[in-house]
Image 1 (cartoon, rainbow, N blue to C red):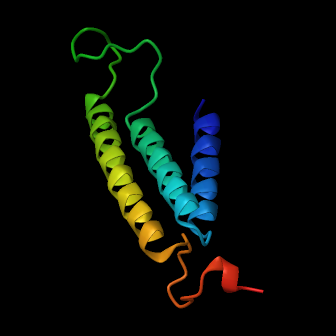
Image 2 (image 1 turned 180 degrees about the vertical axis):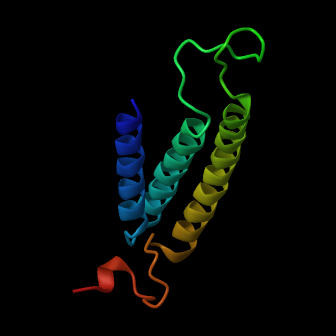
Length: 114
């Protein structure tokens, strides 16, 4: 189970970094989303993976730690808000500039390139 989770975290991180290195705004936003998924799974896994564990201390011999679950729930809400704000900024940038390239040094649009 731990190996599967580690592989999933690694794949999500690799995909997120790859997409963040693209020169368009939408893949950058998707890359940030994949990275936030990887971090959420990592935080959730740090709370010890236990099958059929009681959610409250004292109900059984093995219990699930509620703190990582609360942190992940909070991170999901924050990442949803962050994604919404970044999408609005990307749409505004596209409407103002006419293209969605991230490269700051290049002021020409995609139609000006060879």
